Amino acid sequence: MVAKVSRFRKKHGSSTTKKVFGWSFLVLIGLLGLFLIFYNVRIYQKRAELEERAKELQLKIVELSQQEKELQEQFEISNTKEYQERVLREQGLYQKPGEEVVTIVPLKEPERKEQKERMWWDPSTWFK
Image 1 (tube, rainbow, N blue to C red):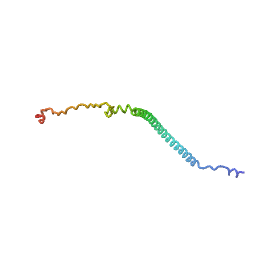
Image 2: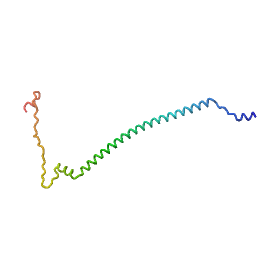
Image 3: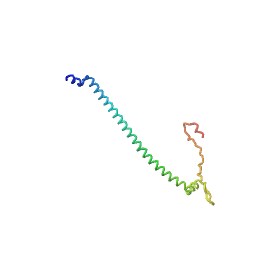
Image 4: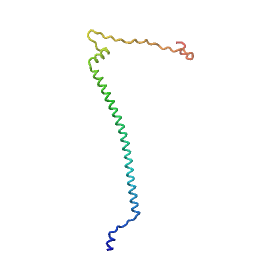
């Protein structure tokens, strides 16, 4: 019976081999954990940047839609016959039968020759 018992006993490996394997496994797991934490932080930062950019773009969309609405209103006003007639009348291009277009041109000031001041140190101004 003694022979049978020795067959089932575990063989003990070298304890230094087990320690080296155990520590290397722990170091590997630790490095993997640090790697994952580092990339998780980077993804969080990138997400925060993208959320900020999304808010800016949403504000720009609202601003542009308001500007579009204002331009649409101006376009609708400018397409009316009354507005077009008023603009043409202001430019003098439209008149009703029996009306005369009068254009007032501002007076031009006569050109003045600039006279140099007579300077006692500049002989070219003495005789003019």
